[in-house]
Amino acid sequence: MVAVRRDKITGDALGTGRRKSSVARVRVRPGSGKVSINRKELDDYFRNEQDRNAVLAPLQATAHADKMDVIIRVHGGGTTGQSGAIRMGIARALMSHDTELFMVLRDGGFLTRDSRMKERKKYGLRGARRGTQFSKR
Image: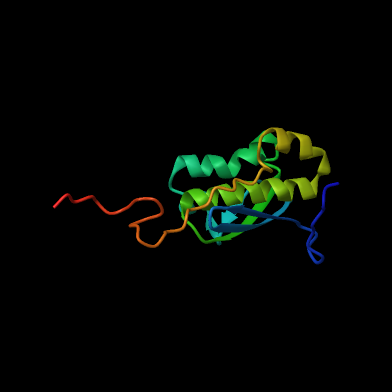
Protein backbone atom coordinates (compact mmCIF):
# COMPACT_ATOMS: atom_id res chain seq x y z
CA MET A 1 0.00 0.00 0.00
CA VAL A 2 1.09 3.61 0.50
CA ALA A 3 3.98 4.29 2.89
CA VAL A 4 3.16 7.09 5.32
CA ARG A 5 6.16 9.16 6.41
CA ARG A 6 5.75 11.61 9.25
CA ASP A 7 8.12 13.60 11.42
CA LYS A 8 8.13 12.03 14.89
CA ILE A 9 8.38 15.36 16.71
CA THR A 10 6.12 17.75 14.77
CA GLY A 11 3.84 15.29 12.95
CA ASP A 12 4.52 16.91 9.57
CA ALA A 13 4.06 14.77 6.45
CA LEU A 14 7.32 14.23 4.56
CA GLY A 15 8.08 13.57 0.90
CA THR A 16 11.20 13.29 -1.24
CA GLY A 17 11.27 14.19 -4.92
CA ARG A 18 13.96 13.72 -7.55
CA ARG A 19 14.38 15.06 -11.08
CA LYS A 20 17.58 15.08 -13.16
CA SER A 21 20.29 15.76 -10.54
CA SER A 22 18.01 17.66 -8.14
CA VAL A 23 16.76 16.34 -4.81
CA ALA A 24 13.96 18.01 -2.83
CA ARG A 25 12.96 17.25 0.75
CA VAL A 26 9.41 18.46 1.37
CA ARG A 27 7.55 18.97 4.63
CA VAL A 28 3.77 19.60 4.60
CA ARG A 29 1.70 20.82 7.56
CA PRO A 30 -1.79 22.31 7.94
CA GLY A 31 -1.66 26.08 7.58
CA SER A 32 -2.52 29.06 5.41
CA GLY A 33 -0.86 28.13 2.09
CA LYS A 34 2.64 29.52 2.60
CA VAL A 35 5.38 27.94 0.44
CA SER A 36 9.03 28.46 1.38
CA ILE A 37 11.96 27.04 -0.59
CA ASN A 38 15.40 27.13 1.07
CA ARG A 39 14.03 29.78 3.45
CA LYS A 40 12.90 32.01 0.57
CA GLU A 41 9.44 32.78 -0.75
CA LEU A 42 8.26 30.94 -3.87
CA ASP A 43 8.28 34.10 -6.05
CA ASP A 44 11.80 35.02 -4.91
CA TYR A 45 13.24 31.55 -5.53
CA PHE A 46 11.63 30.81 -8.92
CA ARG A 47 11.51 33.78 -11.30
CA ASN A 48 10.04 31.72 -14.16
CA GLU A 49 6.25 31.35 -14.08
CA GLN A 50 6.45 27.83 -15.54
CA ASP A 51 8.54 26.67 -12.55
CA ARG A 52 6.17 28.32 -10.05
CA ASN A 53 3.18 26.62 -11.71
CA ALA A 54 4.93 23.24 -11.57
CA VAL A 55 5.51 23.65 -7.83
CA LEU A 56 1.90 24.60 -7.11
CA ALA A 57 0.29 22.04 -9.47
CA PRO A 58 -0.14 19.16 -6.94
CA LEU A 59 -1.60 21.54 -4.36
CA GLN A 60 -4.08 22.98 -6.85
CA ALA A 61 -5.06 19.56 -8.23
CA THR A 62 -5.99 18.38 -4.73
CA ALA A 63 -7.54 21.72 -3.63
CA HIS A 64 -5.01 22.09 -0.79
CA ALA A 65 -3.32 25.28 -2.05
CA ASP A 66 -4.66 27.46 0.78
CA LYS A 67 -4.88 24.73 3.45
CA MET A 68 -1.25 23.59 3.70
CA ASP A 69 2.07 25.21 4.53
CA VAL A 70 4.97 23.71 2.56
CA ILE A 71 8.61 23.85 3.66
CA ILE A 72 11.14 22.71 1.06
CA ARG A 73 14.89 22.08 1.05
CA VAL A 74 16.24 21.51 -2.47
CA HIS A 75 19.74 21.18 -3.91
CA GLY A 76 21.45 20.15 -7.13
CA GLY A 77 20.65 20.80 -10.77
CA GLY A 78 19.03 23.85 -12.29
CA THR A 79 15.68 25.55 -11.94
CA THR A 80 13.71 23.13 -14.14
CA GLY A 81 15.09 20.07 -12.37
CA GLN A 82 14.48 21.61 -8.96
CA SER A 83 10.88 22.55 -9.76
CA GLY A 84 10.22 19.02 -11.02
CA ALA A 85 11.75 17.50 -7.89
CA ILE A 86 9.68 19.80 -5.67
CA ARG A 87 6.52 18.88 -7.60
CA MET A 88 7.11 15.18 -6.93
CA GLY A 89 8.07 15.79 -3.29
CA ILE A 90 4.91 17.80 -2.60
CA ALA A 91 2.78 15.07 -4.18
CA ARG A 92 4.41 12.39 -2.03
CA ALA A 93 4.06 14.50 1.12
CA LEU A 94 0.37 15.17 0.39
CA MET A 95 -0.16 11.46 -0.11
CA SER A 96 1.50 10.79 3.28
CA HIS A 97 -0.75 13.40 4.85
CA ASP A 98 -3.96 12.04 3.32
CA THR A 99 -3.98 8.66 1.54
CA GLU A 100 -7.36 9.50 -0.06
CA LEU A 101 -5.49 11.78 -2.50
CA PHE A 102 -3.57 8.91 -4.11
CA MET A 103 -5.83 8.50 -7.16
CA VAL A 104 -5.96 12.24 -7.91
CA LEU A 105 -2.18 12.56 -7.67
CA ARG A 106 -1.52 9.42 -9.71
CA ASP A 107 -3.97 10.39 -12.47
CA GLY A 108 -2.36 13.85 -12.64
CA GLY A 109 1.07 12.24 -13.13
CA PHE A 110 2.55 13.85 -10.02
CA LEU A 111 3.83 10.59 -8.50
CA THR A 112 5.67 9.35 -11.61
CA ARG A 113 9.44 9.75 -11.51
CA ASP A 114 10.85 11.37 -14.67
CA SER A 115 13.91 9.19 -15.19
CA ARG A 116 15.55 11.24 -17.95
CA MET A 117 19.10 12.10 -16.95
CA LYS A 118 21.99 13.80 -18.72
CA GLU A 119 23.91 11.33 -20.87
CA ARG A 120 27.57 10.99 -19.99
CA LYS A 121 30.36 12.21 -22.27
CA LYS A 122 32.23 9.48 -24.16
CA TYR A 123 35.96 9.51 -24.82
CA GLY A 124 37.01 10.55 -28.32
CA LEU A 125 33.92 12.75 -28.70
CA ARG A 126 33.21 16.39 -27.85
CA GLY A 127 30.05 15.54 -25.95
CA ALA A 128 27.76 12.61 -25.31
CA ARG A 129 27.22 11.99 -29.02
CA ARG A 130 28.81 14.86 -30.91
CA GLY A 131 32.09 14.02 -32.58
CA THR A 132 34.80 16.18 -34.04
CA GLN A 133 34.22 17.97 -37.35
CA PHE A 134 35.35 15.96 -40.40
CA SER A 135 38.25 17.47 -42.33
CA LYS A 136 39.01 16.11 -45.79
CA ARG A 137 42.48 17.70 -45.88
